Each structure stands twice: as C-alpha cells, then as structure tokens.
Amino acid sequence: MRAGSESSAQTAVMPEVAASAATSDASPKRRMGVWAATAVVTGEAISLGIFLTPAGMAKSLGSPALLIAVWCGMALITLAGALCFTELAVRNPEDGGEYVYLRRGFGRHVAFLYGWMAAVVMYPGVAAALSVGIVPYIQALIPLPAKLAVFVPALVLVVLGALNYFGTQLSSGVMATLNWLKVPVLAALIGWAFFSGHAMMANVLPFANRRAGSDPLVDGIAGATISAFFCFGGWWEAGKIAGEVKNPARNLAVAFSGGVLIVTAIYLLLSLAFVAVVPMEQIGSNTAFVALFGKALFGAAGGRVLALCVVLCVLGGLMVLTMAVPRVTLALAQSEAGNAGRGAMAAFARQHPIFGTPANGVLLQTGMALVVVSLGAFDKILAYIIFPSVVFLALTVGTLFRTISPVKRWWYPLAPIVFILGSGVLALMLLMHNPLAALLGAAIVLCGLPVRFLVRRREA
Image (tube, rainbow, N blue to C red; front, side, top):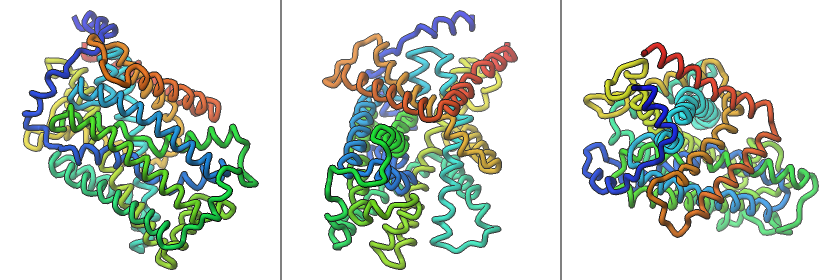
C-alpha cells in the first residue's frame, strides 16, 4: 500500500485549498499577525550581508548606475517570486513552505530532497555562519576575552533555540520586535548619511561611468548579481510558518510583497549612502569599508554604532531561521511517518503537548548548527548548497503550473516565468563561477535519496 500511494504521489498535483484558508483562521495555533509575518520576510533578508556585500559590488561594478541596476534587477526577480510564493502559501496555509509545495507539485522524492537539505545541511550551516559572524561585532560593543568569545556562537544558538522551543507567541513577539527595530535603525542611518552633510554627490558622479580598477563588465555583473541574491536571500521563509499566521490569504500577501518592497528600498538607499559617503576609490575589503563608513558618519564611535546595527540585524535573521526551519522538519516528518505516526522520523512529527511548537525540530536545528560551529565547516556548506537552493526555488515556483485549479491572478504566468528564468540564469552563473562547489552541492542533496530508502526499508 505504501509503495502504491507513494507512486501516485509522484504524479500528484497541488490541490486547491484556498477555500480552507478562511476557516483555518480560527485555529488556535494561528497567533502571528501581519506585522510578525512581514518581519519574517524582512528579518531573514536584512542580515549581515547588507553591511558586507555592497562594498564588493561597488568595487567590482565600478559604477553607481550599474550598482542600482543590479539591485533593481534582483528586486524585480524577487518580487516576481514573492507574488508566486504568496499564491502558494494561500493555497497551502500550513507550516512547511517549500517542502509542502514541492510534495504536492512534484511528489515526495523531490520534496524529501529539499527537506533533507534544509533541515540537516543548509540551514544549520547558515545559522552557524551567522552566529560566528556576529562575534566580532559583539566584541566591539562588549570587550570579551578571547577565551569567552569562542562560546558566544553556541550561546546565541542555544538562547534563540530556547525561545522558539517554549512557544510561538513568545518567539514571534521577540522575532517581530528585533526585525521591526531594523527598519527605523537603518532608516535613521540612511537619513543621517544624506542629511548630515557626510554624503557627497561628487563621490557618486559621474553616475554611469565605470571607475578605474573595476572588474571586466560581464564578470562584475555576474559577481554582483550573486552577491545581491545572497543579500535578498531568505524572503521566502514566511511560507514555512504559514500555519501560524492569522488570515493567511490577506496577511501573507502583505508580508511577501510588502516585505520585499521594504527590503528593496533599504538596500537601494543604503548602497547609495555607502558610495556617497565613501568614494569607490577608497574601497578595499568589505570590513574595512564598513569601518570607513562608520567613522565618516560618527567619528570614533562609528565602529560601535555600526556594530550595534549588525548585531540587531543578525539576531533578527537568526530568530527567523530558528522559527521557520523546524516547521519544515515537522511537515517532512508528518508526511514520512504517515497516519500511523511510526518510524524513524515519528519523533519529529509531533508538536510539544504544552507549548504547541515543533520542539524536536527546534532541538535538531539547534543541535546541527552547534555541530557545524564546532567543526568550523559552515563556509564550505554554504558554498556547496547555494546552487541546489536556487534550483529548488525555481522548482517550487514551477509547481504553480501543476495546480488542478488554474491560477487566476493578473501577474500569471508572467511572474513565475520571470522568476524561473532569473533563477536559471543565476544557477548558470553559479555553475560557471564555481562548478566544483555546485556539483558537490548537488551530490550532497542527492544523498538524501539513499537515506530515505534506508529509513523506509528499516520501517518496512
């Protein structure tokens, strides 16, 4: 029976469940409003990357006009994806995000590969990288001995894991507060740069001409596009917590589209502020550029001010990860365990009886991130997994073409076509830039197939 049902699942298409979205709003687990849902989108996108990548992008492109063009191009692709993910989340108002969409669109094998990558490989690597990356900025605020500083990443991961373990209302409140604080803080930073007299038009002009020392045009655009994708990355996480959102049909639409527009505005303005305050000719390394920017705006206190901004942004992003990823584990485990609730993944298929959270999924996410931190392997994991991540995003949007009830939106089919084509170009860039890492990443993901075979064989 299991083999037959799984075979039919491979050709299954996504059912129409939008009608249930309205009634599901009464579910007691739906505690997140529109502000918290939008905070998930902005919180994961606005993290450490915005303080590090614009300098490299500006130096590589050598032109403010090209810098803006790359940001706008990536924003267009991202907005197209946000429209598609809104439709997917409204049709599937439950936790799990991409895993649920892929399972219903392409079957359990493809979905399992995504869930395997997300829960065990990619997101623990991202969490580990952010927790380690935040340490120098915490030290800039609170001088810590080197012997204590090495424990900071683990402490950050454990504290955030505990917040998510003990309740969605508590964790979503903390997450929303951290991530909405980012917006006024970064807006104030941008306003101070432009209206305090530190930004100079002479640093931006000539607007379209490329500066000496910039990379060849094609290489520069390719590298900047990859960096822009890294910065925007994570906007799709709101789909993973759709089962926690009140009135998902309205609130998720606002969260995806509104969140992407907020992120785009901040990225464009902050990048312009960077190059208007610090001339492109002075750009060396990314970290040195951030120090120059902070010193130009705030003098000797600049390093501490920028460090505070980075800490706030990274903690918000980590909070989103720790909240969203265990929902993927929960959806994966529930699908694999079946109605009987037995098997190797059954422990992850249950929510906590008191707190109502995917508690074992939180423990798995936190534990795997701690392992990656202890091994120091997060850089390699991120390099290997980015290529298959882009492929899975394109496949996820592609499920819109496999629905039983047709999509009747003003943007369909243009938005999914734009996103899939943009993702394809980005995947090709990644493959050409580092073919070994891309192929190794694909191999790591495909390892999920024998893992699933062994687990199911053991259960049989």
